[in-house]
Image 1 (tube, one colour):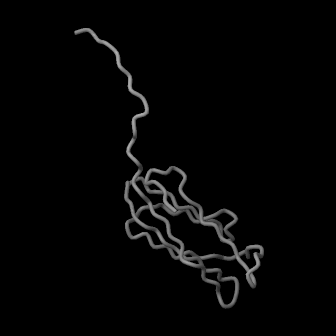
Image 2 (cartoon, rainbow, N blue to C red):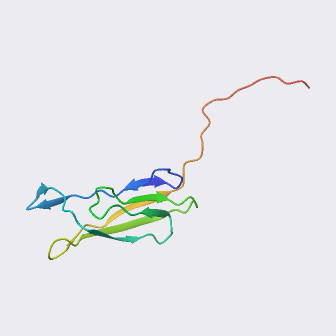
Image 3 (cartoon, helix red, strand yellow):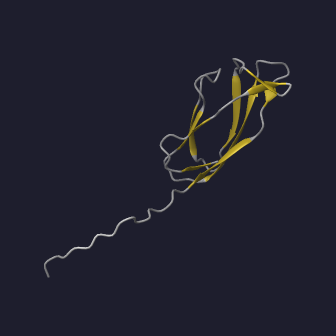
Amino acid sequence: MQIFSNDPKGLNAALAETSKGAAIPLSKGPFTFNIQDPNNTCLVTPGSPDQSVPLNFKPNGTGATGTVTFTVTDTSVTPPLVSNQVSFDVVAPAAAVPDALVASVVPA
């Protein structure tokens, strides 16, 4: 997954849980996030403890690029459940490509 460093909305974390391979309703958490953003590319807006409002990653406006990784822990069960590692790249936006050419005349 990639997002541009000027993306105005960013990405939301999406969580799902299974039991014996079958999807089950997401627990109420709380969920904790271990986020690694070594190039300081994103602002992180925490979600609600139960993630009914998801955690959001939004590029911070500096133009920084790099890879963000995170894992999530559900501490409501014993032992706590730890997710897979998720990653996404923050990349520079593509340069504008012209799609029209206009010609005219002007006084000499």
